[in-house]
Length: 149
Figure 1: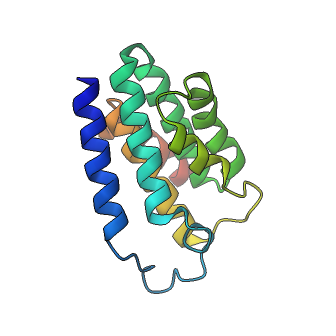
Figure 2: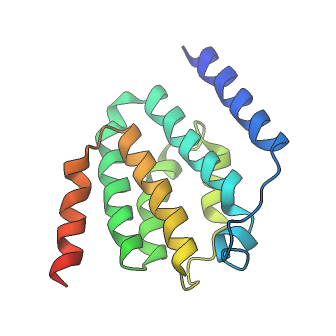
């Protein structure tokens, strides 16, 4: 199973490397695109968590909870705390996702997020949470909190 996962990751990364990436209109100056985090860094983080959950299925709930909490924090514009939710999981198991760890550590956590940054990071946290078993009801609680504000 681990060999199959490694082959899958290599194919995905090879596909990412051969695809030209252009920022969507209006996002050319966004942090995630300027820093190079999008789209390859985002893909590395998502694949890293898929590898971590495959190698260590017992951490699936921790990944789900961390990604959901990070998703809510990104909605509030708090990048440092959101990324910390993921970093703590990767730092405990760096052997499974060293590139994901590297991609997250490169983010400027004190940077103010614009709309494009938030959209990209919300998508990343949402994908990780869904990979870990989150359903739409897990995200609706976050949306209800936004409506009450």
